[in-house]
Image (cartoon, rainbow, N blue to C red; front, side, top):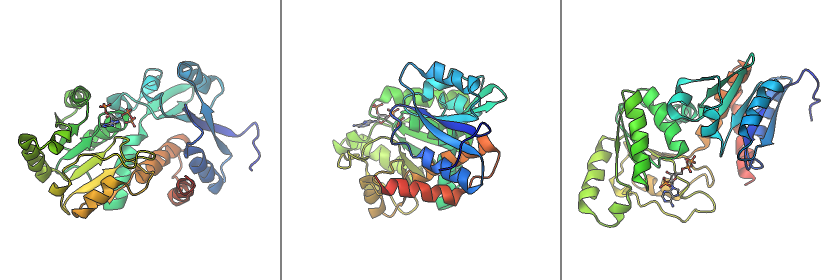
Length: 299
Ligand code: ATR
């Protein structure tokens, strides 16, 4: 255990619950590797307490914090400034204390893009993307894709009004064209019109991103009624779930030849980007990756 002194720079994470976060392991190992006198502390911040916790970033002179469930959207309203991705997605997962001014960033979406680039070499500005889900993760991914010049996105969500709200947000603020696609449940019910539409759209799509908690431990057996048989080797399918690290959704997609990725890349890179924002240094990616994998192996 490293000694903490009056000179130690402190950053951390605000969330509730926070006990299972992988971020402390990932960041502390990175600080140690670079010989930095920094420490990363998990803070349990109850719903309702975020404004006072954010005020403490200034009063305690923390270098910055990550923000996680359930505070990401509320945090956006408490910042002095927002990055373009945070403004567009309406959510903040990283706060930087810049000489007493709090700047809110959203590194989840950019983390997703970097994870994708690293694994596939894909620069996601061609073809189109289908996003399953319209919650916080879907917003971050949609905003990042739109800011990275993805021309077209289809959002499919169980509650279609939420998909419509996400589509409106991106359509009104970027050049990306976003449309709502019926949740594939209707495909399972043999609705031929919808089935044809999915088939047609999947011909234009290069990327499918699964952002719902379906298939995540302990819901491994909950299926997503996706028309897997319309997939082919031209498709890249990313399931943002990382526990289990190989989901049913990935397995089914891979059966039809699609290239499949889990959510570990996004998790790693959102942390690495936050590290760089706080320290100004290149993050030791491989050290952080190793720490993340050993945390996940312990689940
Ligand atoms: P996150 O921040 O991880 O994205 P969230 O904001 O709570 O979490 O969003 C969860 C997403 O998963 C939503 O799109 C949700 O669909 P609804 O908008 O219809 O609630 C989706 N989701 C959760 N459970 C689901 C289920 N059993 N079937 C289909 N979609 C589900």
